[in-house]
Length: 385
Ligand code: PLP
Image (cartoon, rainbow, N blue to C red):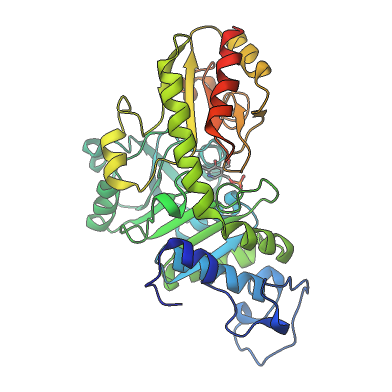
């Protein structure tokens, strides 16, 4: 599909089969493990679910690539499958890479707990401050890894500097774009080599599957695809169907979530029982200027600290009636969690302290409900502490 259309049109039409299967308007599910041999000469071209090339995979790959203005894309069985296969496709024993110091807890654990056994070393950097990056370079540094909006403190990193640094030092630049979604930031158009997603979150948007995505040039995505084909983290066609359906409303959902989260952040910031609010759309955020320049929207996440103890934070959460207390994010329903109990529980307390993640920090994933109802719910729960 030509790249001339705007985002919502791409979401509906990109990757759809040119000739409708049996006339079906909606992409059917091809629940077949294997497909008739078509004379392929390359193992990776054989049509088999694990090799990520059923009609359901192909349609999604094209939709994702067009959406972020890239040549190619790959869906995976989870966000962590996308992240691990991508890092392992370009890093081998003896290699070194740089990563932002405050990453999604699962990625942080992969880097800190699993990679040392494979002989892959990482130095953490402050992605907001390029001044310390060069001194961390080594002869075997291959890659730089960041997130668009960090979890759970919602900083927007100096993404243009990351791209420049990678180009000047011949590194592969990799970014987890989960929190922004392609609606708010398109890494490949901005010079990144690989864009990654936990599609479990905004891309699918309905909290009913686990999936991931890798987006980039044909050459790089092919290398990741071959690694994933060996590791085995392919997405089942039924989950492909749900992700495909979910993505069609991504633009509408994210527009609402951008709006709702800012309304909630402004409310919380003015509340006397709230000490600090993290949201890149707030003028008080250290990332506000950069976020306004780089992003088309601030996304649907808010984190904050209340005046009080961990027990007070738990009490507040227990009084919420619309927010569901659980990890994860990016769905149509609003969620609340304390990252220390869930997404970041794999980090050591000292690591969390160093990253500025306090025990009493509360994180909200804002859904598509009416903002006034969410604010009323937060207000009544704050009154109870
Ligand atoms: N990246 C980010 C920013 C996440 O928040 C998560 C999960 O919460 C992941 C990656 C991992 O995704 P998944 O749970 O789909 O493997």
